[in-house]
Length: 249
Length: 326
Ligand SMILES: Nc1ncnc2c1ncn2[C@@H]1O[C@H](COP(=O)(O)OP(=O)(O)O)[C@@H](O)[C@H]1O
Ligand SMILES: [Mg+2]
Image (tube, rainbow over all chains, first blue to last red; front, top):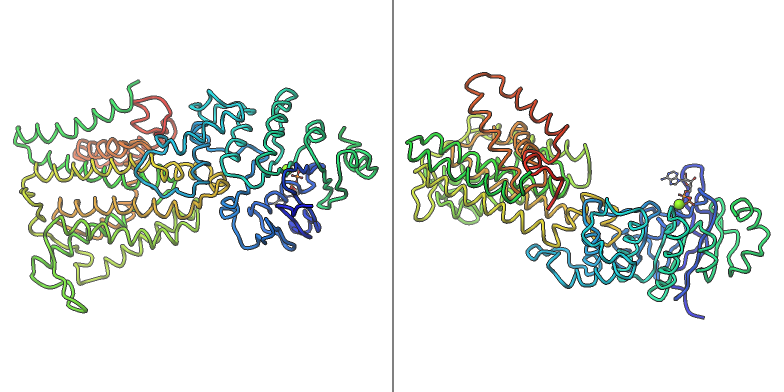
């Protein structure tokens, strides 16, 4: 069995009296999609924020390729290839779609302190950026300001930016949110293609998508992982049924 | 309405035409006013890099304007009195050569911007505004209480500093120097804003979380922008000292910071030629209305209010009437 790319050990995070991460153990193996499901407020987004360094855990460890990430900020972690998308789309609204992806390609290249050549005239940036946009189905929308893109297009733009970051791990926070059935299906197809790029930690409420995509599923309730298993195991799990699937589906 | 390049070209053409016509009409004072516009616009171009492209609302750019001015004033005063600037560990004398004064002004304001920026950029929003103001006030009080260079009274430059091949005492020739410096500053701002650095800087203004998430450190980005911004404003300060043949702490005052910000906001935040439009309008108002009534500042305030409330792109924005950032 291969070593996990991402390994989380006994992660604990409190907001005042509220324990949002309660001794979480979690891992992500090469080539897999590991879905994290759970009711609203369970602490899924907070877990992603701790992995990408936006929040710092009170206890526990996050290992990336066996290396403890403690003490590294979000910029350093992004440079290691932790590519995330946000629950609420987060792009540069005044930039065009292409400029947004170029920014991500530039971030991955590590060469930002260049002052002379126009970024948009640099084929080393725009070439890959256009290719990533094509992969998420945004061809032809390059010059549209991100603020004018539809909600679904913005979700895909975020994915293109994540792809542009030479990702070693995808951390996707509800990529289907607000997409509608058709949009979700398209997104499912894109994600199942992404797994060949890097393993995916997928936080998602859309159960059809989760059951289609996931190799494993973990269920988070009140900051605790109450079950981890294959799709069939989770479907059959009585505790999960009552805690989550029962009132949701 | 018009394309932005059309508006920019027209503005520059007017800035060049006014002193030429004034020269023909024998009105040197008008040439001096045009020179003042070019220098103020240049100070604004500097601030615009921090404010317009970086989203860094600095209320302390008078510090750089004044430090540039004092660099010129101090070097010139030593040259004029034939006293060395320092004798230990090695002797440095004063100079009246602009080509030596300018690098010194750039270095001095750049170092000041590096120090002020490094500390201020740890904060954001209203704290950033206040801390940049506080630093500028410290520099102001330092200049006021430093008797060696005139203290409160300021420092005269009896003969304007020299530029090889030109007679800088001739108003039109000095205008040409200031105008060339202004154009160069705009060129820097254009090239910078389109570069990789400029892309990331503008990205960080719009969404700093996103810039971090693609692995770019916004702090370093903003610090470099702040230093470049301070240097350009500093060079404008050196020219301003030469224009007036006088430096005083008023160049360092918070009113000066406010005025530089007014040029940028009036003209259009984040527009390359916005500071020119803003400075021109400012000088026009001051000159035309200032003689009629003391209340011209009230009118300026009203205009500023209108721009902030109804025309985010400032004057350039109104003339081009299309929200656009390049
Ligand atoms: N910065 C914060 N400060 C205090 N409480 C927070 C903060 N962020 C999230 N929470 C709380 O932590 C809990 C988990 O939030 P979150 O991780 O967003 O849940 P999920 O993504 O699973 O819906 C919620 O009760 C939320 O209100
Ligand atoms: Mg969430």
